[in-house]
Image (cartoon, rainbow, N blue to C red; front, side):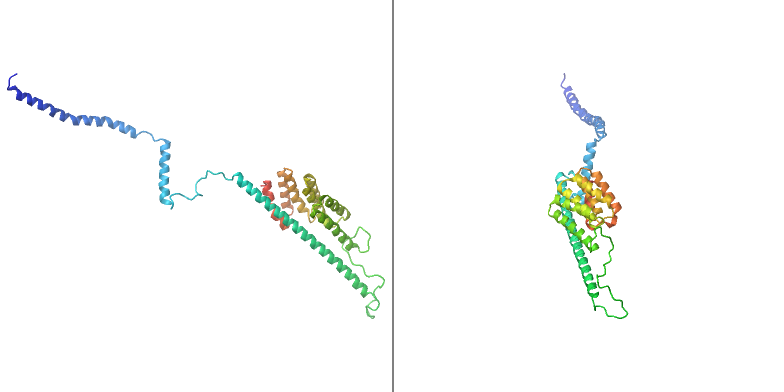
Length: 309
């Protein structure tokens, strides 16, 4: 090759790099265009539910940090993973309920004792009043007690009899006072035996009182206390029968409502909550607002224990 051709050769060598420099942008452009569909396809991929939940949680936390002072709601907000009531809580509530029932039972016992004492005092006062009236009439009927004149002379042989509202089945001289006082004394003896926890003797005494003094106001008390003694003695089925008999035999008796209440208590101990609910419902329907305050206070807890509606 001639020397004159070398410059031309150098010029040809320089033109190659110039050509490659011009083609590089085109190559990059082609690569970018080829990668664009891949990026677009990745952007169009569906969002999974987990991603959506995570995004919602992040948004909620951000809102909580803005709204609540401590960055989260109070402990009472939202849902709790703890159970509504554990066994320990229910046992504690059951123990407290048993304590309340025992206290109410003690209150009822105390009230009955006080009522009985008041009745005995009233009977003693009535007997004393009757005795004093008889003595005063005897004194007034004596000679010289009443001035002569227009007033008639009283009978001096016997004092005037005291009027009585009820007959006495026993032919005695002091008929009404003897009947009431003897009935009170018989019931008091049975009540004292029951208070001393001598249940068998109390049952015998109370049944004898109920049969010996028919029509006495304490008969309803005696029959109800027979059921209480049987219940305390552990004879639950016999106690339920005694309570039912006292309620049905004399529904207007002073302790008929008590017998109906303790009938529900007896059926609960026999494992019959539905029968207990029936007894409590009948108690509220028959006696309603006339219930003694002690029974009215004990009835809601008894209904809750039996699961009544």
